[in-house]
Length: 57
Image (cartoon, rainbow, N blue to C red; front, side, top):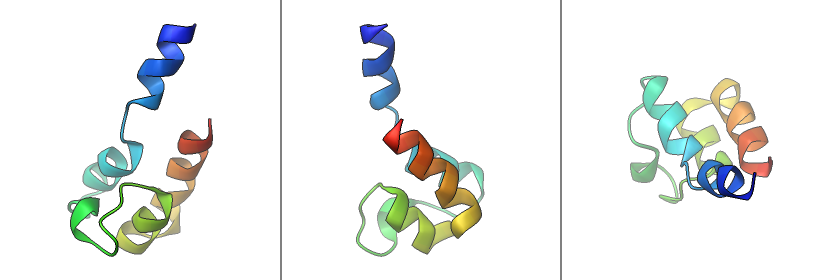
C-alpha cells in the first residue's frame, strides 16, 4: 500500500488531465506550476476539480 501511495503521488495529474483535455501544456500557462490552481487557469473548473481531488487524495 505504501508503494502504491508513493506511485500515485508521483503522477502529475494537472499536466496529464489538461493535456488529455486538449488545452496544451499547463506548465506554459499562468505561474507555470503543475497544480490545480494553474490547471483552473489553463482549462477551467471542469478539469481542475478532479485534479484538486486527486492532488489531495
